[in-house]
Length: 237
Image (cartoon, rainbow, N blue to C red; front, side, top):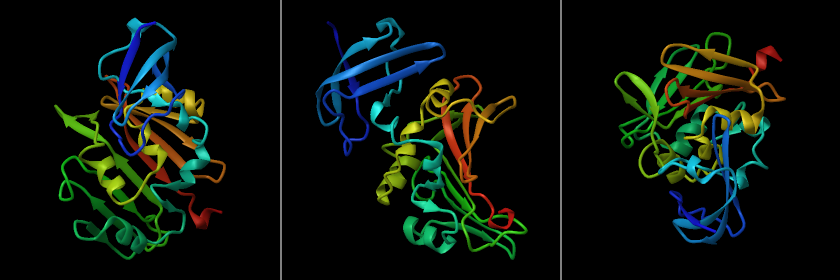
């Protein structure tokens, strides 16, 4: 049986012997099994699907994140939960390169290219009726703006994902970047809402605790490049 080499961009979490890796493109799926793991790659064999459906540099998803990841997983996102303070975000992520916009009703913080190239992390409080000192929304993007359009960019070595991991954040949700929209639906089921425009579309879900989870994809590649979560507002409970 022909062996297939899969690269691992995150050497701190090497593949494991017997682990399944998944690739989903539309209605075409491929499952690989790790037979010889190494630090930055693994030798795999084809378990199901057709080998000609594989493409060079196509992202795969580890079977290890299928089990623990549920919509309720997003009630804690990149280490923050509902009612965590804005100050906590500044302490964890650092205030040296934070761009802060604050008013009586809302606080918005960005960590962007001032931190490192292709970094985009936004944390904000709820507008108007919310508490400007408490985290309400978090948006992170692993993206490249090309010809005025958003597209997925691997930032595991430089950019958003690398920045967050450098702060000790090991949220498995970071592994979702680069997946197809069909893979997200395979993981979390049919979305409650889908919003589409010329350049991008989003799949929108809600956890059992009311956290709104939105996944953003480019229209042309259908690849996930941004995740936006909104905790349920305390004044709406």
